[in-house]
Length: 397
Image (cartoon, rainbow, N blue to C red; front, top):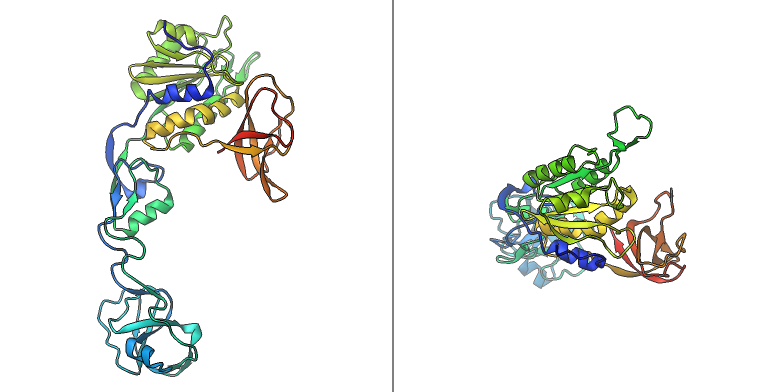
């Protein structure tokens, strides 16, 4: 059987991402598009704005009066935002204008209301006015034909506002991927049940559901507490293959008599991509493919699940969503504090981004440490790394 044991984290991500891709394309309403991924680039169909408009509340002044330097003008009209009729400005006249209102054809500039002295229906001002002052021109926000959102780009609220400003109502988006969650372990029971001797509550179920939901995906749920039984594990995997695009299994990775996920995968004619990652956590982490669906088996420890989801599974989910730039972006960063124990193997640990003496640094999180930093992080330590001041690889989450 072709398998790779002991791959690097980078190879694990590459091998998994090669097996996944975006699903079908569907048209969705813009109001439902947050965190969805555009399947096609969207361009502006017109200049926005498509008319000259005022950038401030003030007074619009004609070209002739600006050129002649006239500083006392009669207010003959008011132009509110959304006004559709044409206003004519004659010499010595100006119009009160509101922010966003259309600029008359004869106008040269808008002077802020704070810069004038108002005397009944007349204004005076003392400073010189520049041509086109406080005027926003057609296409100043974006021009006809400009790409507003590229294919493979995830939509943020800010990008959605841009599309709305262009008059877009619906967009083509990739279907949301479905992630099936299986949690194994005969010693676990679901929260809400009576805790009997020898049992612990299954917390990975809620953890993974939350992580998948935060990634903007659907998570059809498995039974929550699957017994260490090959037939039951196999049955859950088959259910996941029917319902989902990716299957995540926790537990059963230690290699003991009751760690039966790998034997179940082997008996169910899966293509094994790898059966271990050369990092801690990562021992006996397995990836397999069946019926074109990726299956990932993580340890049962929630801390390991949390780290491996962000380091390994997050890029997989991004690619499955259709995101063009799906790879994690690791940076070099200095440790503000030492780790609790330096290890002789490559290690991924949780950390937090902090500001220390005007410098951004990574602070390793110790057990039961309350998060106080700017952002959560994962740091990637080489064998022997972990001393205060060392430069390490970091992934800001």
